[in-house]
Length: 175
Image (cartoon, rainbow, N blue to C red):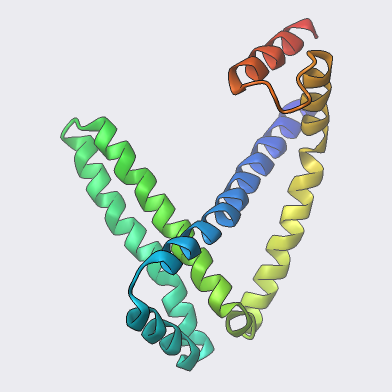
C-alpha cells in the first residue's frame, strides 16, 4: 500500500511540475510574440490599462485567459463530437497555450499588484512550497533516469529522444 501511495504522490508531483514547466515556458514565448507584433499603440494602451487597474481589477484581467481558453475548448469538443479528432486535439492544445501563455504574461506584468492581495500572496507562497515539495518528491526519479542514461553512455545530450527512451526501457527491465 505504501508503494502505491508513493507512486501516486510522485505522479501528482510530475503533473504539478509539468504545469509549472508549461507556465515557465509559455510566458517568454507569449512575451516574444507580443514584442514582435507591430501593434505598438494597442500594446501601450493595454499596458497603461493594466497599470491603472486596482489589484482586484487586475485579478479579473488575470482570469480572462482562463475564460478564453474554456471557450476555445468548447470549439475543440465540438470537433471531437463531429469526429474531427485531430482538429479537436490541435484546438485543445491551442487553448492550453493561450491559457498558460496569456496568464503567465499578465502575471509577469502585474505580479506586484496581484501579490498585494493578501490571499493571492498566501496562495503564491503555498504554490512555491508545493513546487519545492514536488521537486523533492521526484528527485529519486531524476536520479534513476540519470543513472540509466549514464550506464547507457547517453549523458552528453548528444543522443536523440528515441535512444534515451530505449535506454530507460532496458534499464527498467533489468531491475
